[in-house]
Amino acid sequence: MYKDDASGGILAFIHMEFSDPRPEAEMCYFRHGLGWSDKESGGRNFTWLGYTAEPSVSYNHSMFGQQYGRPKWYPNMGLPAYIVKKEKEGEFFQIYYGDTHDLAADGSVQNTSNSGAGNPDQGVAVVRAKVADVVAAAKQGKGVPWKKYYQGSFSEPGIGGGKFSPLSIDPQGYMHGDAAFCAPLKQYVMVQQSGGRIQQTSAWRQAIILSFSKDGLAWSPWQTVVNISILDF
Image 1: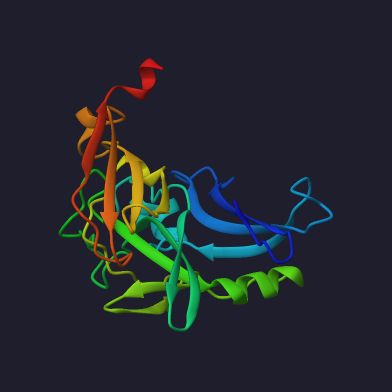
Image 2: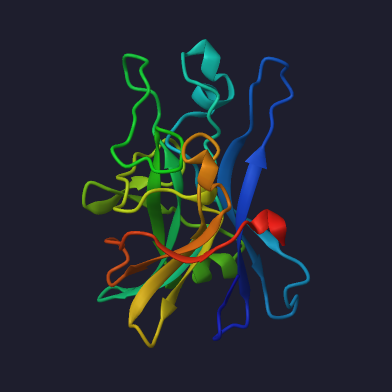
């Protein structure tokens, strides 16, 4: 959630999972979305504003992967962990999540060099939009385009197969975590659970881990906060 102090409205950042009724469908697909609740609603009712991002891997290559030679790997994006990044042009929402490469033109799987606990074709990505634009559009019940970070700039569309450049940290725990600005440290911090379902399976949910960043793009290696199985809670 994000509360706009000026208007009293609330933005809801949403993790979404989609199934397909066709019997040949293999798995579910993922997107992030956005909702808006004005001051009068006070968080009791939300207006749908549209999608903010989806994986680079196409719906068909994910849902019907075997037809194209892609393994049964979920393109899970995780939770929309966001920060508010201040720049000269204004403030930006930056959402961190797990993105998944589409199949290459020759039909092969595009693996990342730092796939970590995610699927071999996944990496940690970031998508952003200007806070003022998002809020202004939300007041009218509308959404705005979000852009993925790719090769040094936020230039690729969040929806429609936009490419991404994986950041310096590896995906962990399906990226079901959160992010924030830590004022005492003057750094951004991201928290996740450890491990994965395809790689690093022995570490799945065995630790809570942190990463830090001064600019929101270069992140420190994951640091373990506590070694404990979440399943034991």
